[in-house]
Structure formats: C-alpha cells, structure tokens
Image (cartoon, rainbow, N blue to C red):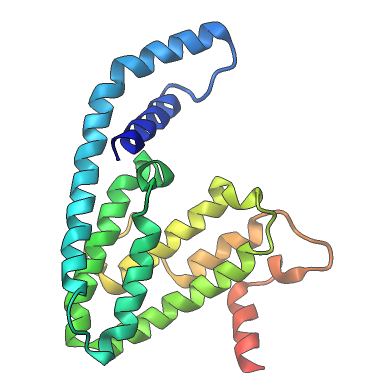
Amino acid sequence: MIDDCIACGVDKLIDANGGPVWSEAGFTALHEKVRAELNDTVVDIAKQVERILTTVFNINKRLKGRVDMSMALGLSDIKAQMSGLVYRGFVTGNGFKRLGDTLRYLQAIEKRLEKLAVDPHRDRAQMLKVESVQQAWQQWINKLPPARREDDDVKEIRWMIEELRVSYFAQQLGTPYPISDKRIYRPWIRLRPKKPGDDVFQRDPVQVRNKKEES
C-alpha cells in the first residue's frame, strides 16, 4: 500500500510540474522538485487512503451476516461497485484527483445501505436505471480500440456513472456538476473513432437502447 501511495504521489507531482520531460536538464530539475515535495504529498495521500479504507471496513461489516432476499440484488450491486473503486493498486489507478471522489462514492454507499433496509424496492428501481447506463456504456466501449479506451475523455464517462449513483442513492452528498443518464450519453456521440457504416456513434444512445427494448 505504501508503494502505491508513493507512486500516486510521484504521478501527482509530475503532473503538477508540467508533466514528463525529455531532456537531461529537464529530468534533473523535475527530479529535484519531486524529491522535495514527495514526503508531504505521500503523507497527504496516506491520510486520504486511511479514510477510504476505514469506510470500506465499515461497509463490509454491514454487508456481513444474514441477507434479506429483498436486499440481495442491491447488496450484490454494492459489492461490484466497491470492487471497481478499491482494489490492489487503486491509489495510483484512480489517481490523486480521484481520492476525494472515491471517499464520497463510498459514503454514498453508506447512505444507500441506510435507505436500502427501509425501501428495497425503490433501491432496485434506481439500481436498474444505473445498470441500463452501465450496459450501454460497456457495449459502446467494447467497440473502441483497446488503446482508445485508456484515453481520459473515455475514462471520464466511467466516473460520470459513479456521479449518477450519488445522485440516485445519496443526493444529499452532492455532485460536482449536474448529472443524468442523458448527460452521460451525450459525450459518446462526440468521441472518436467513428467506424464507416457504424452509426452507433452518431445516434443518441438513449434512442438506440429504447429501440432495442421495443424490438
């Protein structure tokens, strides 16, 4: 875990100082800047990670024990969501800028668990809305070349889906920008590459999904 925090800190400081360099002089200057700030940066990261892991621990305690069948699907969805947020290497994988968001998404899960016990049917309805967006996103991203899937504009959509979850399950926590399924679908049309003869990138994914459901 400490190696993950250090790697995250290095990435953060490189970005903060203008990104990678390609000359010996530039490397020397960047190395000195990173070394000077790395200790304080890693301490900051470690504190954030501690809060994240504490929240994960508290959630896992609530997930143990006997499960009411009416809550089973919701709990399964929560476990799947958590595995995508906190995993081996998540500190570097999510990146410094996402650590605060990761904690907020976990706090949203805590709020969801409180409501799930009271009204599992409402939780299921909201879960199905998110699931619909996730399935459409997965179908869309599978059409992209593997290297394209790693681009920031493509990866951003995955985080938009996390914000959608916050808006459904823990609205009181707030989101950094207005979010809805249509706002998530909108960027897909603009993103490249577009395949000749394949209009899935041209049409509104909401309409594409609805037509499939009608057929």
